[in-house]
Length: 424
Image (cartoon, rainbow, N blue to C red; front, top):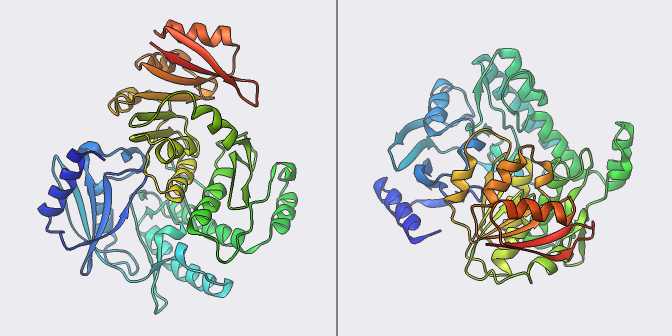
């Protein structure tokens, strides 16, 4: 984060008298969204001009406030107090609710079922108001010491009919037009995955008609496993069901090993990194990773190659959540952005404004429909590291056509693809 951005945060905190507030969350998907706690209130803060993840959410601060006011008298829902929206900042002030996140609790089946029963009452009441939360996940459920349950974070919430809302929030089946990120069934399934052994998981997938040959077991962690390894495990759980690798495969794109734990995937990460890290000097440079998947590259560029900043872009919500865990595990903070390169919106401008020194486009062009548009975008930059699916003659012709004078093969990947270094 630059000095200018840090000054904006200082100004924002000062404007709303939050100097003594406690920072409880800074989204690694967006460094310009924070949540603070002061006394009995929660403050959601956004620096509007630099926010990078608005399209990840259905609602901005004002829309979330309006939905919360509609359901203000439902027990277990945060009460919206006020919102502010200026050219610089957006702020939502809510009454603080007691409890810990369900995601942070170690609980048994009986307690989980009790929590789900209480959560069901909240969901039913929301459906009666024609509100669909769309993001019922353990990270958005609070459980208080007295057993009360709350549902928070309504930035994905939408209006819908009673049955659409009820079915969506209970089962995750989408009968409306908006994406459902989580439901009661999602919570149940996540808990089940924590409890069952890999052998039982494979057996259940076989019963459900899944291709067991595509399932590789994740490691079982010891009780004293580090928080870093735990974060990696959560990342691989998300990545292997994200559809960001082989279509239909229950498998992450990259494999990785740390502290004796092996996280399975299609392509060995260290082999790729050992090639990429030697291509050029990344120290002090700004990097842009297109089609980042788990953003391992951006994290390693920051941690190991001392890049000054990294922007990692992918189309998938789940894979970016995996990338968020990866960045936590390695103690770095790449900017993570969701963007589909086949969308008609002008994604080029926002990525160009990051002002990268080096751009990575590894095994991504093959999956983009409008290849010329994507290549033209690459041509905006002076230094690109590229991995394609076609022959070198075809790929070099494409890259030279958008302005690169030097197009050299650096290495051949384990899949027989050229890793190409391009300069103007």
